[in-house]
Image (cartoon, rainbow, N blue to C red):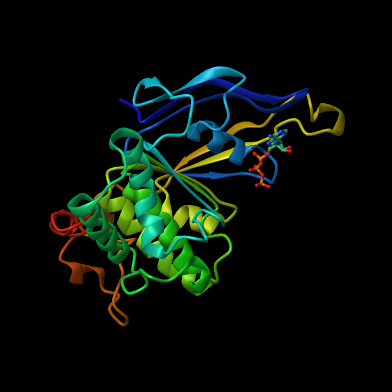
Length: 285
Ligand SMILES: Nc1ncnc2c1ncn2[C@@H]1O[C@H](COP(=O)(O)OP(=O)(O)OP(=O)(O)O)[C@@H](O)[C@H]1O
């Protein structure tokens, strides 16, 4: 079954058609990068997947069932900025989603339940490289650390789909490369499907299994309101990436060791990341 199915989806704001006739399906555990010119409706599409916007026509299915009409814990989201709460500590930011959801069902958590949540939250923070920063506030973190925190916050809810809206767009290149490695590891370890909007094709090819391009095929000024953007390219990244496995192409090759046979396998095939062993001790599992 597809993780996400988009059937004949249109989105209009008043007289303006933003997206038209989108048809696509996304496999479970795929990492899809959404690219396209500014204003072509990428964020609008992501907001429809999140449940913040409804299609004007057509429908979206999540695991074969109609998408719930509102955002829910099954869909996590990280934006370029402002995904975290500035008035909560790092630890508080990671605990808040579970606390709010639990409060709705069971009232506030106290005692052992709260301590267990705090322990899980600390483990999640360690997973994203933020151990030791639990008591800081977001303003005391670098941009890269804030985005790691936003990822931890989203993943605590164990979403089936993680939606990323240019999450790394504001980061310096070095920090970006580090967080790309983290993102790859998280995608390999967490049973989730990822849809990421990016302006950066290099980032798309670095992380994604598949690249979708949206484009307004008719863009004369008099046509802008009457025709929306639609899916113009659908590219499977080669060599194929499979969640839980990494290709040699993705592997970190130690400096000076560019003989790929040193990895003990034929170039072009895949090898285990050890993710399964790691997962057994991981809050991500
Ligand atoms: N709530 C809204 N009401 C009216 N128009 C909107 C609304 N949200 C988005 N739009 C319009 O929809 C179009 C697509 O916007 P969207 O932000 O989805 O594009 P984008 O591809 O994500 O752009 P960018 O790459 O610049 O972030 C724009 O013309 C925008 O003005």
